[in-house]
Structure formats: structure tokens, C-alpha cells
Image: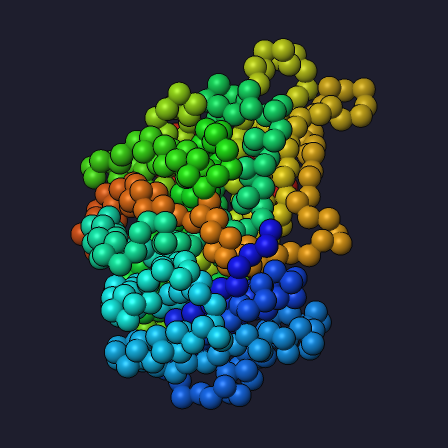
Length: 494
């Protein structure tokens, strides 16, 4: 596909996201010759840097990520695309000078993508200033705005933010980014489901017992104390990333892979999720904080000992919930979601448990470890698809064991592609299929709002779990006595 050149304008370019993700991703797109000739990258930051200082900083960002794959000749080409624009987002002069810079059509492409790697509270004011300086004018080329999560703090604030930015942009110009959807294995979920016809007859309440989605992290909150204490695990991960994974696993086949068809089916799932009454929150959701413990043999602080965290904070670093999708395909199948920091292992998995086989046939045999079948989708760090089956052990007796059919997502000679590379390229293409539409955001907030409202007024107590563990005891969420959190991608005999 031949793409027209574009000018990427990155607000917050000196921040952590740009340093770790955006600039390395743009460099790798240049390595792959996916950035059209004439594409420029304008970095906006408050620091009093000149162009040479910015190029030096970008070199550090890129080499830290590329390591042995760094190509000096490509980097020199990449440097010709880079421009540093110093300015304070709170000052009108920053935007008038930016407009003057971008209006030099001999240097900058007519198409412009604005990446807002800034605080959500700054989204509205920045868009207003861009609009006042005619930078959303599409007479000569397209204008697209990429917004990082969180989109709002709850349903009410999300609506208020949407109303404000709608003054300046159409829905087609807004790209709400969820980097989780750019991960190759997440996209492979769609291929796994809809390109393999043998699974479709089984993908429903008649054969599937329950579904689990887990995102666990070994790290704590690092230097994000101020942000995290106001957000918590439910807003940071469950409302966004994990609900998105749930829609991909449970949605109906879309009419096509076009953006609107795909997003229509995801919204149908979110609309079908049974509302949680406030009086039933404790039966459907659980929260906890990590306490001091050990990660990889090293002693680590608890959440309350982290920097910028109040001593009486009840912000959750672990959140789990049970949902039901009330439609023909999934009625009666519980969906369990959980996320946590400072847990035993960093991984993201989707675990699909099938119903028990009828055991009457095996009643007079020496059967042990008669486990249910599982389909395990490893998202990160291990990218895999694994189907667990019960097989007979060799020998004279009727004994069984669990065996697995494994399909690796990536061959050994194939390199991993960062999610941001895919998503930044999709912005150039105008492909919005992996970006969120507002009604997706809206319905996701409606699901978790009752939980957040209940937790907000219950400030006396929050459970804890030792850092380095698999989290707190929250088995009350499970509908059956034989349900348990699946924490590994290897066979478990319960």
C-alpha cells in the first residue's frame, strides 16, 4: 500500500511513553521502510533543548530498545525527519508558533497526526488551542488525533470529555489507542476463532464451562504513584484492556474485518453484559493491595510504602470481577477477569475451560487426574495457543494424563513487533479497527461504574496480598466449587 506522507506531532515527547515506546516504534517503522518519504516527526516538550540535544536524546531512546539491531545509516535518515519544538502547553504562544512551523508546506506534509501523550486533563485545552490556530482544518489534508487512555475517570467524565472534544473533531478523526489491541497475539485471537471452522461449533455455552482472562505484573507502580493512586487496577487495566480482550474472545463473527463491522460486534458484547447492582458488587468484584514481600528473591515494599502514596490509601493494586454475557451464545457462562501488580509472574493469558466429560463410562477404572479440556491463549510474554486434552498413559492399566497441542505464534526466525508499530502505522493508513469507538468506551464504563462507586464509599478496609504471590483469596467470585484461577500455561491437575 502506497501511503501519503504525514507529519506526526507528539505532545509530551520527552515523557516516558515517548522514550520507551513511541520513538523506538517510529524508528523501527523507518527500518522496515514503512514511513513514506516526506514523513516528519515534530516533538513538543517544555525542556529547553536545541535540535542537537533532541537528536542525542532520541539516539539514547532508540539504542536502548534496538540494542544489537541498531543501524547507524537508518538512524541518520530517521534524524532528518525529527524536529524539536519547545513550548509549554499552557501558553498560547506554543500553539501559534507550532502553526507557523507546520504551515511551511515545503518542509511538512499536509496530513497531520497529533499524538496526545499527556495528562487526560490536558486533552480538552490542547484541542481547543489547536482548533483556535486552524490546525484541525482539513482543506489540504487529513487531521487525526491519537488519545492515550484513560478516556475519562468514570462514565460521567468520559461523556464530558467526549462532548468537549466533539466541538473540534469528528468521531472519524479520533483514534483512542489501546496498545493491547496492537499486540500480534491479540489480533491472532480473531484469526484463531474465525479462520478455524472446527472450533466454531464448540464456542458457546453448550461446551464451555467458563472463561478467565488474567493480566499479572511483577512490577509495582514505579514512579507513577500520583497517577496510579487516583486510578487503581480497575480503571488502569480491567475497564480498558481486559474488557477489550473479553469482547474479542466472545463476539459474534463480524461481517468483515473492516473497522466498523469489527467494532459493532464488540459493542454488542459490552451491551449484553449483565449490569451489576450495587448491592451485589461484593459477589462480583474483589480488590486488594500488595503488601511487602519478595520478587525474584529480593525484598520489595508494599503499596503503602511506595513514593507519593498516602498512608491511608485504599487504592486497589489487584482487582478481579465476574461477569455474565446474557445472549444466546454465552448465557450462564461465567467470565472471570483479574489483574494485579507485584504478583508471582508477569503474564497475560486467556484461559477457556470446557465442561466436564460424563464420567459414568470410566466409573470402574483407575482414573486419576480426569481434568477438563482447556484452550490457553498466551498473550505475553509467551505467545502461544495451547489445547489441553486427556490421553491414556502407555501401559496395561487405564490411567490418563493431560497432553497439550501447541501452536507457537511466532517462528524462531521471526522478530517480535511492538504493538505501537502496528498502531502508529494504522493511523497513517486511516485504519481504525484496532482503536476504540466512543460507544465501546461508554459501555465499558457502565459495566465497572457500580463497582467503583461502591468501593469509593467503603474506605475502612482493603484486603492485602504478599508481593510475589498470586494475589488474595477471592474464591467467593467463583460459581462452582471446582473453579479456580488458572495461573500457568502448563497442565494443572486439580
